[in-house]
Image (cartoon, rainbow, N blue to C red; front, side, top):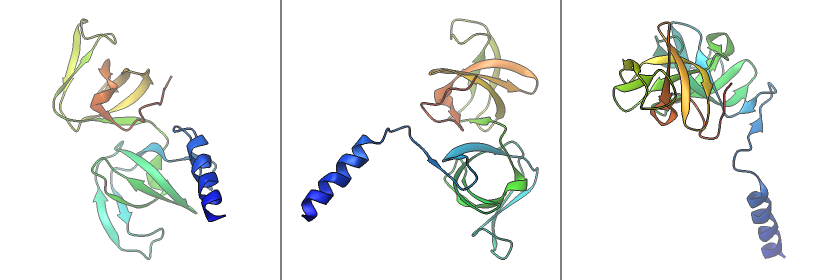
Length: 162
């Protein structure tokens, strides 16, 4: 009988689409990407002011991944894998992405054969305006240009933005 239930559980897990996400108490999907709205923000070890500060962020627009929710607190993960809790007032639904892996070229069109509009170092953050399966249109310091999405942190592989 236990084997029967184990098989049913396994089949149920297999039937769940890989892209499916849970919905948190806020009604928003979990996990999801957001950005830091404050130029100084405290990450805490738990969901409340009574918990110690684990990290201080001094970089507005930094993309973060929300992995859990508790009241007005969001458990977030940064690009280095650091997790902790932040109050919703410190966060924004604005979509940004972080350039990873070294200096990257951003192009006039979503094609490496077009003119390079700018080159951005790893760690540069830009606003995500649009993404297809391979390319994203970013705005960095007022310049709009296309970058291959594999060079960005702050997006899911199957996520399209328009």
